[in-house]
Length: 449
Image (cartoon, rainbow, N blue to C red):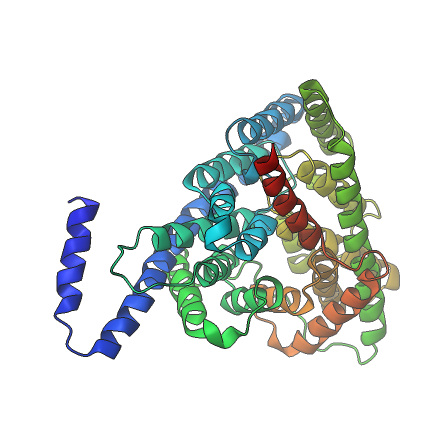
């Protein structure tokens, strides 16, 4: 059945509804429902392939160590090449692109939004991020999922027939981003808070029903296929010390400063790379990053590879609470090298992994109990992610929903707020804010050429 035939059938069906208000409500809600369902399905597919490739890489490096020197450079170079050749706006996390698209969501700048959220970008984002994770890249799936979801919601809005009630493009993209994060991590509250804290500059009442519904449908779709899983599990954080707040604040300060410093270094590298005049300079940079990561994984610590979920689960659910002093440093270095290649990949999960390393290290130095160590690890995750994103409540809610540890919600929020305050010492704006401005500038610069 053609698209035109489907539109005619829908029009006939809705014409039969006598109550005009009910008809309008259904017509307004239906695009969000369809887009949310598609987002959940795509997120599940993407998440499963992503996890499979990450496990395969770890298995390869465990049994055939030297393969990393071939696998990582080849995958990194391909991931960078496919982005540069077919869709440059598929590079990086995807969240700054969505933020820029929301800002540009008006008739005058619609062509710019198309460059940020299109089916071509959607496809290249998936291909490049898969290549990066297969090569051991220190990337996450959440940023790409958010850009993919934003694209799905925008396309559904574009495909609506002319007689359909008009729906705000900005609200569709914002809702898609929230649904994408909810489906990626199984964190519905995190998706809502993320939309409010990071994406929207308008009052939530304008699109709260659509936002809540989209997050619920996308999350339920993901749960229906993957089960009601927790991204991390149930770490034991009972019987905490009354004096744990002092170590908690210390972890938040250090992790927040490290997260914001990492972001600053990423921005400095991006500015330096913009001075490259020849293609071979970019190729040499990508290969250098790949070989450095491969060398660290081969000679020093294989835990540098992948999204960082393994280090989070190991420190939270085993007796290996203490990591080496260099573990967090390697994770931070790996994130910087992977993210600045120009290939696709998120920074949420790597930031959580680096924060877990910081919390675990300080817990070992302070010689706290296993339960208190778990709390410091979770607070390190919140603090580091806040240092990168400057969204303390989103960070706290995400970690809360990943672990279902409601008894430490105030601890996590304190960690987020402290990390947000100290991060201001490094930079007043988040990594995403800087990159959003850069994407917007590049789009207008392209028009002038």
